[in-house]
Image 1 (spheres, rainbow, N blue to C red):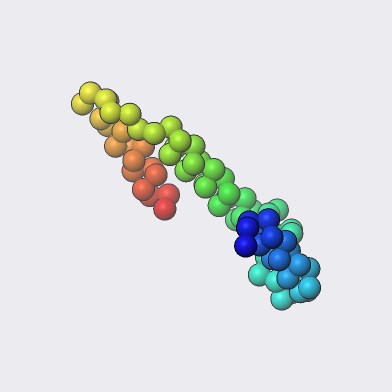
Image 2: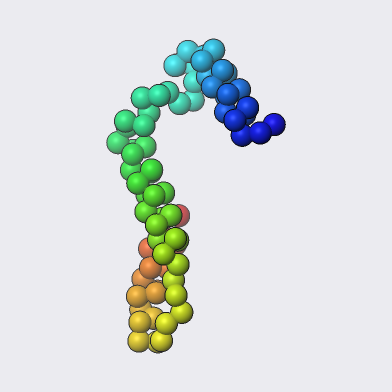
Length: 74
């Protein structure tokens, strides 16, 4: 099964359920906690995309702080 057919199958399944029975509802993205998690994932992706270049030891503390931020987010 490809991704599109899988998504369509999930959408049909969720449309058949009531909101009480569904694990998520369309309004969940408006929830403050859900928005925070999305922002956290977005931030983590930006940090990973930056990549940490190899530098001289003088800037090693910056690398360590970026690594620790990424580590503690997960």
